[in-house]
Image (cartoon, helix red, strand yellow):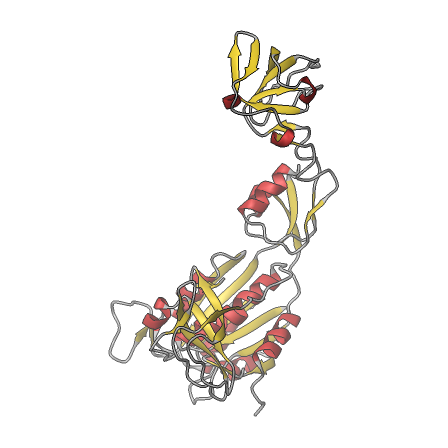
Length: 399
């Protein structure tokens, strides 16, 4: 039996098997949630001219303390087209072009105006600090983001502001989730005493909801070899098949023999981590298979560390893995066991505390956690105040 792989090696081997999917071109607004296939480039300069950052009056610093004659107005979208001479001023609004001949803004709260005569009111003086210089944000030809960057709402706004109408992105990943197990019931309110609700499939689908993928679910599939092979064949067109349950070594754990009968190549099986040791990775043709454990916490943790990064890699992300943080322990942490362990915990913004229940089937404990604490194999006990590493959980998965 092959030895369990260290977490980092297992993640690296899995991601090395995945190539970003084909490129397609989408309107910028439709590309939300995708990853850039090419760098984002500015096709225009922003701002295109010197603009006022405040409401007030545009004038010349050389004029000193005034007074000035108001000779016109510059409004956003309606610039003053003339040239401002010595002793003159132009009423200006936020976002409006700074008129030719001016180099300062007098805030309206610092001004006193009588008809066309403008004076200082003693509260402040003209300044150039309120002028947004042309191109201070970006200029035509600038690279604004690298390939592999996620197009979040701010990135969508940036792409449009930079003059882009369409972007090259990776296509959506086709994912099929297969729940397996004779004990699984589809109707949560109608479970026999020998059954449990099939919650892993919906959980995994929900975890993938924020990523650019199309998900279908099959099952629950009974613990029969032929049924599992049939389910795999039904999912053969997927980019990624995710199984939940049946990946261990019991008499009814049939995912591995089903994959072998389906003529998939097993890349590796078992990771030296708790929970989540019986994780399996395989491939048939262009289809990747990720076999997750059936215990719900194990399925969740392995999905955070393997499934989500894999889908990000297929979607074109250049940094698909989560990153850990550090915080002082707020309570005693027990010594580590023989495997790397992920302990459910609570982070209050200052310290981090483990939750009392750590059983791999305990969903209530998982629902109360907002972080996973990393406890290295054979780690000594950590006293209060010791820095410990953790992954923050956000919206149901690792942030």
